[in-house]
Each structure stands twice: as structure tokens, then as C-alpha cells.
Image (cartoon, rainbow, N blue to C red; front, side):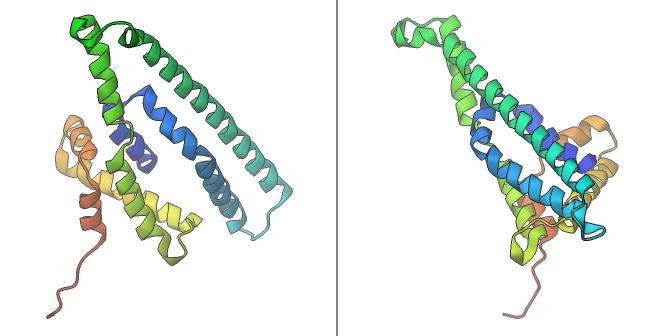
Length: 191
């Protein structure tokens, strides 16, 4: 649970409903990858894809489809609300704006500037590259190893921090460069 919470924890400081929209485009690919991983996990123990496994996989797939629908509706509604709060932009010249107009506009600019969490994506790409290996397919064992690494990283950071607040602050500051330095060690050769 710690490893799964790590992804959400580092995104909390920059929560924005508008960040949902770029994810909507990628959700079908995420759905397919999660479906494949779930199917691999279910057949891993006995090598068979039984009727119970099929029912489990189909219900999981339906849950993911409902998630896509809800996320899409939420993203569109967030965009609608943001556009409605900025309706004055097309009617009022920028020179006549007061604080009531500048604050929502600056808020939109801030949201647009941070709409794609590049650091989070870089960190995920490094972890995916390291843990999937040469086939670039996430197997259940590789997924478990990635979650265990993340959990051990969280545990180590928490142990060194001493307080929950310091842990949360430090955990949000773990960058892709930090993850790369932890995972990859260069050999000292005489070249």
C-alpha cells in the first residue's frame, strides 16, 4: 500500500482538476496495460486462465471502464467551470481588469503551466525502464519488485526523517535524478 500511495502522495501538492484532461487521452492505453498485468497475475499461479479468472478480469475491466468514464466527465466539467469563470476575457480589455479578473486568470496560467507532471512522468519512465528489462513488458514479478523498491525507499526516508511532516516534505522532493542515482551505479573503470 505504501508503494501505491507514493505516486499519489507526490502529486498532492499540485492537485488540479484540469490535470485530468491530459490523462484521459492515455487512459485506454493504461486500461490495456492494467488488463494485461491482471491477466498475467491471475494465470501466474497455475498457468490456466479459468472461468473464475475470466470473471475476475472482466469485472476489473468494467471497473476500469467506469473509471475512464468518470475521469472524462470530471475533466470536461472542470474545463467548463474554468472557462465559465474566465468568460470576462472575451468581453473586457486586459487594461480594465481588476483583482477579481487577474486572480482567476493567473490561476489558469498556473494550472496550464503545471498541467503535465513532467518530473513524475520521468520518474515513472526510469522505474519502468529499470524494472521491465529488455522485453519492456511489466510482468507480475517485475511489478511486485517495483512496488517493493518504492516501499523500501519510503521506509528508508521515513526512518531517516523522524517526523511525519518531514517525511511528507522529503518524499515529495524525490526527483527522477535521485531515483536514477539510487538504482544505477556506475562502475569505476580505468578508462
